[in-house]
Image (cartoon, rainbow, N blue to C red; front, side, top):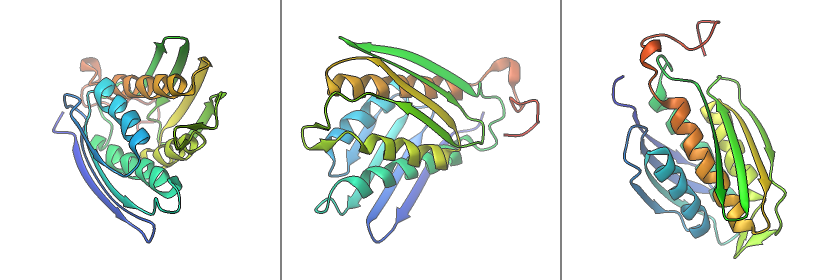
Length: 197
């Protein structure tokens, strides 16, 4: 496979975002978004997915974090789609279970070309610090729509909302890593009976 890197800029009246990523990296991460808890979660994606991820966002966080969180998800999705190209030779499917103390989450992903999000996280709190837990739906919906993946997220147990969310992001990173790994038996082949994804 050739280098799987991408740089994407997305500018709107609400946010100005730049994402640089390398899908075959070492987990190096750098963030400047104005949303510290999201940065902590994106660090899990980078480290557990072994994706080098650099995200800069200048957003209207004086209103709230909604636009920044959603638009960062969109832009990362666009960058992933750009970096993987025609998807030939990838495993396509990935999954992971990740525990963190009392919390346990499962994530399964399919780089199908068909965007769909199925997410069941029974959050035990509405907020973690100043962060609204409902915004994670917006992050993952933005990612799904623009990376064009089917994504299932289930938090199976947990009573600490921080732990619930962190297990999801760690599992997401590991599932993405598995799905995007090169399959030596599929070199140059699209992993679909349709012949395209």
